[in-house]
Image 1 (cartoon, rainbow, N blue to C red):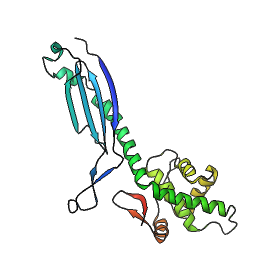
Image 2 (spheres, rainbow, N blue to C red):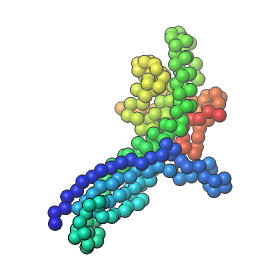
Image 3 (cartoon, rainbow, N blue to C red):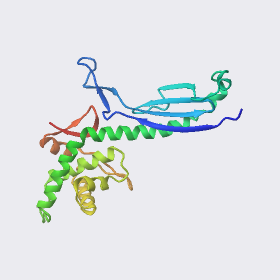
Image 4 (cartoon, helix red, strand yellow):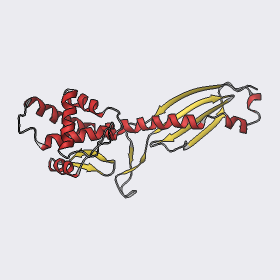
Length: 229
């Protein structure tokens, strides 16, 4: 019998990256990730469903194999054989699932802190518009610390062009944003970057300035994520 393969995939993801536990169930407020990525496809007479947690491990956390809808009895009467298992392209699908899981996780993380990032972006927009030419004195350190924080956020989320993301969220020009990030790094708000790669690690100096503005790091959700009280 020749084996034909059809593949269909779908993402299953909640908008919340973390599920809240009952008080006292865990050492902190958040428990295990609640999102997942699911792939379904047909190989021969069998339908295979695999599920990856978010963040995704190397392989699926669950696999279900059942007779495909409309499969003839003579095609499934031998059960699930080794030959059937060999037709499952586990390595290839795992790579796709991990990429999708990363996207789901990034979307959830962005959603969790979008209000704070928007607030910081509005501050930058107002400051840039109210003082278009700051003169020899330049802009205050607080301005560059907030620019660095937004930039750090998008670097940590894995965006390939974090400068463009800062441009979009602040509504300021790309040239201006790129210059502010350069100055923020020069002022010691961001750690030095490797040539040709974005470097978004905030320095202790930037953190102290941000904390003075009542922003604080969330050690639960990640080192570079900022939330306001």
